[in-house]
Length: 235
Length: 75
Image 1 (tube, rainbow over the protein chains, first blue to last red):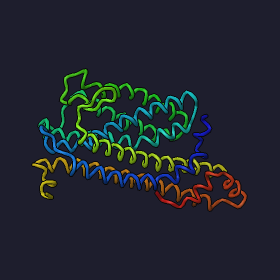
Image 2: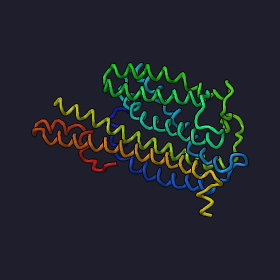
Image 3: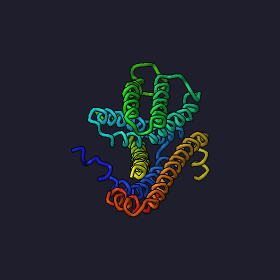
Image 4: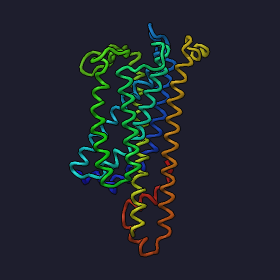
């Protein structure tokens, strides 16, 4: 089954896909921005500041999703010795890191009008900051041990250590008294968010997902060409 | 209407700066990754061009190398 993940086989797809993903991203982002900034209603309590949710929440979701994916791929890649899984993980990390920074900064901007402060050492915010630091450590590890077996081992250890933080981020609002409100969107039970706010949120999430896919594809192609460059040196 | 969208009942500065920060980060990340891609591709083309005919033939037999050379898109 893993032969289908061979770089040689998928490069023909990944090299052509970015332009289509970029096109789709621009369209969905435009629709999302119109919905989020103009069409969606203001909140009865938070007024227009609630619109920050449309960038803050998707960014937080995606950076958590990407880190979970990186961990899964690293562990499976390490167990079954699939180098391509490490390449995929490495290519996912830059967008995951940027989304974690966006979640932190937009959360801070949202905090000022809502809580009256830019920053608080609250459980959710602190655990999110820790996730950002794990992304930084992960990216630095790849810089130091560029594409060798040691890099695979060290980055796997980093992701396994970092994944412990993911459920802490998710449940911090339930486990501790925090400034953050509990989750408004639940997959298993009824969501407390109104559809007029849910749709723009889902559209923005789709746009952000496409952006991370675009960055992943571009980074993955770059990494493949980098490997091929080394291959040409050996000829 | 436009003034209302801009000021957002006094929250405009917060909302617009959050969206601007997000889009700025998107642009920066896209540009950085694109530059890295172009740099590696240029390096590949230069190295491929420097190969002698025999080695170039071996290199060209790999489908991925052909793909890199044929794909002129810079995205």
